[in-house]
Image (cartoon, rainbow, N blue to C red; front, side, top):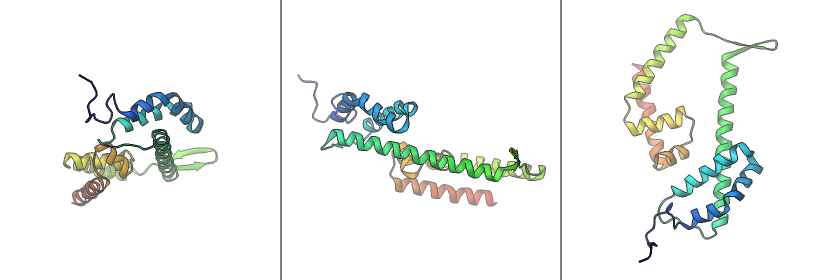
Length: 181
């Protein structure tokens, strides 16, 4: 009796894409290192493995090597976009929350009454997020608080992009209504 099953799941030991990944792993790590540096190369190689192992059943590729390197390139682009978004957020925060005085950066602190009011609004918002349904809450947290795109959130949650967009939109409406009270 053979161990080979015709309905083997992607990500299983007989998966041709994962076998090709394992054969080419060292080359993929060099591919990543040449483009984004050695520090991120291993992380990206691991992320590529997880993406391949988690793909839908029945997903096949005509040219396995091309598929691996195209997926690797897409992962690098996703990471670069995320880093750019984070850098833009950080820069925006620094320009609004700090004042330059010569070579020194000083925090621009709000008056005490504004700080207390802001903390109260934040507490209301945290409580409102906690009351959201679990899927909606997770989609909101991943997209709005962790900075993932709709597509990245959909991939993490195992949902369609449209479902994630609906969850985030419904969460924003619910939170706006709750905080406006």
